[in-house]
Image (cartoon, rainbow, N blue to C red; front, side, top):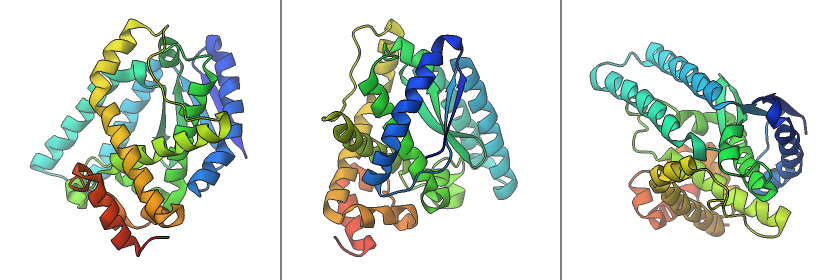
Length: 276
């Protein structure tokens, strides 16, 4: 599998980049097997400084907003909501970067890549934690597979700043995307390492990690719920039927569904045409 590594976090992290590539080469075929989804080629992994990452996100947000603005011509509340969302994302990154080990992001349109925050891993005391790095890479590879599936429609729709105008405001994309990625990384680490990797605070983590973890608690709790919901649907329907979700928007959970994940499983089974 073709893989590209761009080490842009500084020479101090050269060894990290090399180890990430080895882990990704081992994990990629297992991710494809578990998800029954193909990964794109090449797989691009980029280590970045936190400052460069923040700036790249700022440029990406401006690009997306301008593209959607030209397409949708938003007015009033929709325009104000998009502006507010961009500002909130900026605040969220500033507060939570210490616990963001990696992201899958399209800093260039149509070119998603895995971005590794080396400084975050250092503060988390995980630069040498191969089990944690395996989980992180498996998780982000899953997001690449999601993007690849169905031409990236679901993944891209989740990033829209104008969901009301697109008629998708009732859909909980993050519940699906993160739940699926957490379910997959659990399956992959079990296959590769013999048991599911669960991340908790490392003894050598910095104080700034504790502060960020406190802020991120609601998100972390929500991720556990979404992982369980995805696991339930796959257990009932099977992976092939579940994967219809990447081309059938009707299967994506609504915010109402996610108040009671059992409701999503029941609706999914009916909409997808049965169980395995």
